[in-house]
Image 1 (cartoon, rainbow, N blue to C red):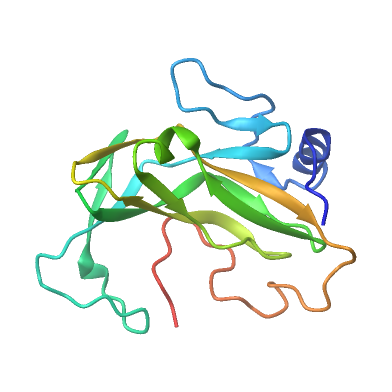
Image 2: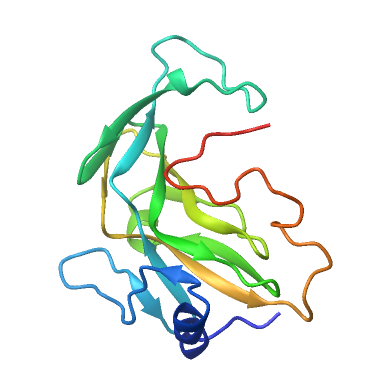
Length: 184
């Protein structure tokens, strides 16, 4: 599975609307970088955050997840409490081609501060804004900056198109906008 280069990503963004809005060059002056890189695309985090709280002593259950476990914030900066996490979403809307799998890695600037980003792979023919889990592994509050880079997506070309795509399986997170909570 080759990793697709900048010129392929640029062409797919233009021809197939694979990434919208698309930033053609990496922006980095005074911000955590975002935009097109040599072999990936650094996405921005939007200013909608769901910050995990345990005021009700809830149990985290992926089969019966309670939205009450979060405090919603819309702001240019999110403060994640120590040893906690927040959910957010990308500014960008992605449309993944049928013969491509996309994996995500956190930005090194955040990783060096003990802030870990997790995103599951974007499957062939999935589309939407990506929900991002941002963990603060430190004993201190951590700042996340909306409108700036949060993670890098790498596009892997499959040897051939898959037999059944995410869209054909009617995946439960298809077409999501904003933060999508766990669904069963």
